[in-house]
Image (cartoon, rainbow, N blue to C red; front, side, top):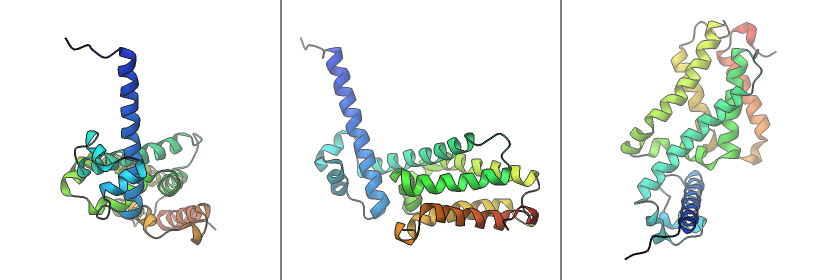
Length: 213
């Protein structure tokens, strides 16, 4: 008769397995954020994770599955971070200021806090169709967050009446997502970049009486 593992040992083994899986996800996110989808190899990920490449198949069936999981985690963390930043704002924050806060949070998590978020923004356009299909629901949730922000600002009379809100939303998110492709710390501080982005958004979509001096 085969003896069942001791519950404590099983729990410890489970925790170790989960920690290793998480380490692989972090490593894959880091490599993806630097090299991009087409140049990311399992050997690169294994090296960053401190594992042998064949051991990765115990946790993920393929490179494809690992990258899909990284992208899903990245999209979720980006949305959750922006939502958390908005929830911390005072109750009387104006709609246009909420949009600017979302701009700041998006850039912060994308450029400073999360390889996952950067992996998403840098690689979404390179992904196979099946991964993009899997990510569509989370992507739609994030887009809906921005839609709500802009509609609230529009209803408050803080958005220029001549704008197509749908196009404006996609242009703003697209510009934010493209930032990791060109911005480097050597070009200035994140605070300076954020201030410029907020000013462009406020003065680009905001009604004239809402614009910065």
